[in-house]
Amino acid sequence: MADFKLTYATMFNPPEELHTRFDEALAKVRAELGKEHGMFINGKDVFADEKFEDICNSNTDLVLAVVQKGTAQHAQEALAAARAAFPAWSRTPWQKRVEIMRKVADLIDERIFELGAVMALDVGKNRMEALGDIAEAADLIRYACYQMEKNEGFIVQMGKDPLPGYEARNISVLRPYGVWLVISPFNFPFALTAGPAGAALVAGNTVVMKPSSDTPWIVRLLTECFRDAGLPDGVVNFVTGPGSTVGQALIDSDEVDGVTFTGSYDVGMGIFRHFAQKNYVRPVILELGGKNPAIVSRNADLERAAIGIVRSAFGLQGQKCSAASRVLVEEPVYDDLVERLVELTNKLAIGDPTDRNVYLGPVINKKAYQDFQGYIQEIAQAGGKFLTGGKVKTGGMYDKGYFCEPTFVADLPLSHRLWKHEMFVPITTIAKVKSLDEAMQIANDVTYGLTAGFYGTEEEAEWFFDKIEAGVTYANRPQGATTGAWPGFQPFGGWKGSGASGKNAGGHYYLQLYMHEQIQTLIR
Ligand code: NAD
Image (cartoon, rainbow, N blue to C red; front, side, top):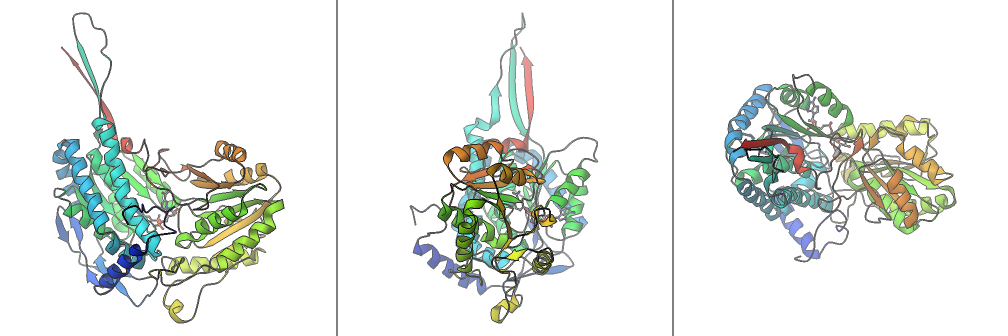
């Protein structure tokens, strides 16, 4: 496997050894289900009075792990541990921090198959998506290390102002803020915890991580990679429990100096507003939802367009912030494209996500399953036509999990609310447009601006890049119309309601978000 680099764009043709090793790891993981896992505060496992079960969404008979229902008190303890650890960690030479963090990335790589197997069971990702999430985490951490090294610790000699009789020494230094909170979503629990936490730590902050209550187990295993790489006690802390209690307690605390929240628009905007209540402004990095369009020109290569759109619409069951949830097609190629989309979608295998041939696993939980059914009803009532799917899967193993059919919808009036609402289930709406200008107008007429895809000539593609309001844009990409970004290749972040910083993770400008500048002037 030495010459195979796993990314979301290369994952469609993995070497056979990758499957063998995944299967071996899966057997080991399955043999050890149901164990209790602590939170991790100040270098120690911490247990709460109340527990909750992390249930498998592809087979709800399986308890994957028993985890702690942390309280506001645990949130305070974690923040206090991070505060106490900050002076020493922030003064650790950046070269040493980079060395330890590279060790974390190496440990993640070493454990990738076991972690991937847990991910498939915990989130319901198919095996390649599951392995991708783990590999992406390691690369996000490495990218932060690379940025730190490339910029030589962000210590810059500035000009000497001419002061007769004196000599000025002016140095610009980027320094960490202090205690950084990382709140992550269920859908990329590993990469979107490790990425922000990794950047915060490389920069010299200490960290408290809180995962989604749907995916605590896999983030506990990430915490163990940090622990085993030798991070000092208190530098990384991990608490579990409901967002509305333990998450809110973290957000409410004055002990937080900065936060990275990745999740839904409503919760993120709530955090943003709440965070502004303090007597000064603290950094808030928000990575929020998407309503990502794929635009298909009359000049498009329809084979590429169809495969790219199907992959992006239904990868991870439509539960990617970058999912292609709207398709806008020029009239002359509409019928041809739809025929191809239907044919490809009907071939997708739905089932146990650990099975090597399966593309769609279950949606995350019962609420998402019910949401899917609610949207289907709403679409039918509004006159939408189901080109594919439109139902949940039932019978046999399907009755034990939350399986939904990949659903393309035509003829939903463009005025319908679901054209603008992030559904986060495998439903994508398609519309016929008269011109690319009309497509662009519809594409940009949403609160979100995360990713977007285009298929057409290169000249049209340049027009698309210029006009589209989105942070991650792709043209003529069969590997995914709107999905499949990778650190160092396609840094990931959103415009408008999709993100707050305007700088993309895994790119040139991201690590700097975790530090504030100090100018040190010394007169001799
Ligand atoms: P969510 O907003 O429901 O939850 C995200 C996290 O916030 C969870 O850990 C949750 O426990 C916590 N939380 C909930 N209420 C809280 C509160 N009041 N205070 C503090 N924390 C709280 O999102 P989700 O369902 O886990 O994830 C899906 C969403 O995330 C989608 O909208 C998706 O588009 C978005 N997302 C965005 C990106 C991106 O990079 N832009 C990436 C992945 C997912």
